[in-house]
Length: 415
Image (cartoon, rainbow, N blue to C red; front, side, top):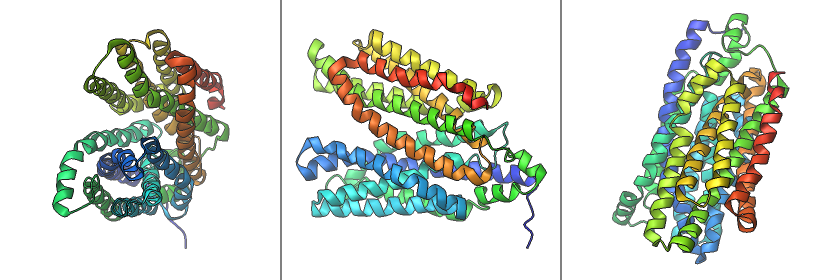
C-alpha cells in the first residue's frame, strides 16, 4: 500500500499544533521535574545520614538521562515521538512512586533507583525540543525549537516554589517527610502523559518520515540531504558547551560560600541569598532569551550563532579569571555563561537536525542528549578537583580549552 506524503500546507498546520502541544507538555514536565529533583539531595542526606552522599542524587538523575537517551531515540525512530515521550512520562511516574516508597522504608539504594528512573523520564523531556524540529521548515527550525526550550523555564521556575505547599499537602495526606512535593510531580507527569497521548496527533516524526518520500514536502522540511561531518560537529559543540556550563555552574555555589565566609565573614543566610540570586540569574540567562537565539540562528545561520555562544562563553570565563574573587564578577560571569550555553545549544540542535536526513535524526539526537549528560557529569566531577587546586580562575582557564576546540573545529560544520 502506497503512503501518500503530506502536502506543504498540511505540514505547516501540523507543525503549529505540534509546537503548541510540546510547549504545554514542557511546562507540565518542568513543574514536575523542578518540584522534585531539588528534593533528591535532601532525601539522600536524610535517609543515608551522611551529607556527603547527597551528591549521588544529582549524579543519579544525570546517569538516568544518559542511559535512556539513545533507547528512547531508537523507540522514536521506530514508533514515533508520541510513544517515546509518553514512555518518558511513565518512567518518571514509576520513579516518583519508588522514591516515595524508599522514603517510607528508609532505603537509600531504593531511593537512588527511583531517582535514576526520574532521570530517565527527563531524557524524554529533553527529546521534546527535537520533536519540535521534525516538521519545521529550515527558515523557522531554530525558532520552533527555542520556543519549546523556553517553555521549560515556566515549569522550572514554578516547580521549586511548590516545595513548601507540597510539604503541607504531604502532611495532610500522611506522606513521609520531604516527599509531599512529589504529589505535584505525579499530577504534572500524568497530565503531560495524557496530553501527548491525546493531542500529539499526527505524530510529527512519523509524518516527517512520510514527508521525506515526496520531493516537495521533503524540501519543505529539509530532509533531502545528509551531512554527517556537520552533524558530528553539532553534537560536539552542544556537548562541549554543556560541559563548560555544567562544570563552572556546579562549583560556583561552593566558591561563593568559601569567598564570603573567608573574606567577609558573611552570615549563612546572606551566602544562601547570594548563591540563590546568582544561580537564578544564570538560569534566566540559560532559558530566557532562547527564542532570540533561535530566531538569530534562522536568520544568521547556525554556525554563526554557535560561535556567538562561544564568544559569550569566552567573556564569561575571562570574567571568572579576572574578577572571580568579587561576588559581582561571579554574577556577571554566570549570566554570560547561561547566555552562551543557550545560543550554542539552540543553534547546535538546529544544525544537528538539518544536517541529518529524517531516518538518521533520532539516533543522532539521542547520541547528542546522552553525551550532554555524560559530559556534564564528567565536567562537574573534574571541576571540583580543579577548583581545589587552582581556584575559580583556574577552573575558567581549563574550561577555555573546550571553547577553543569548538571554535577551531567550526569549519567542519560547513562541509
